[in-house]
Image (cartoon, rainbow, N blue to C red; front, side, top):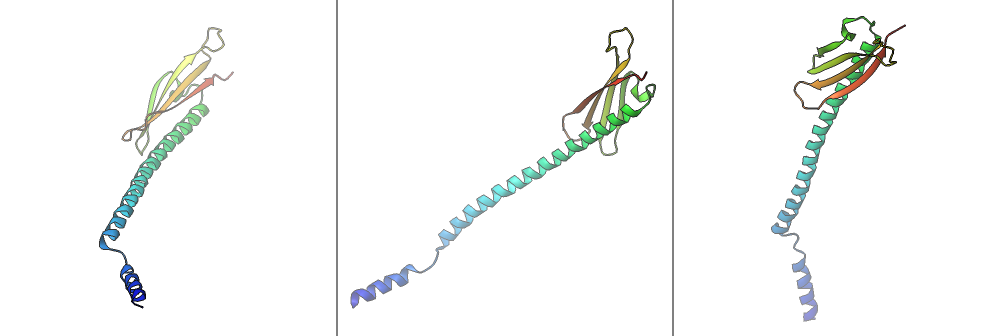
Length: 137
């Protein structure tokens, strides 16, 4: 009988719950995990912002190149030389127009347009596109 009572007393003593040290260790491990997730979230937000700026620069380059393709051959924006244009949200477009003779007959019958877009504040690198435009017959 005495042995059964001793076993019951031990069971009661083992069911005391978690100690303060165990709770603190669990909270420390949990907080380290949460800090890692928060760091990844901040990094992801920055990458999304950069991707958006690159997408905007690509859009401006495509739009400007389509505009330049539709202009008359003698328009001031498509004659030989360097041209620049700035947008309201900080992008700078620069295009260099060069006359070339692609068919080798001695006359410059085409123009190469090298278009570059960059941002004035953010370091996105440069978005570059090239187009060869032939003189209409």
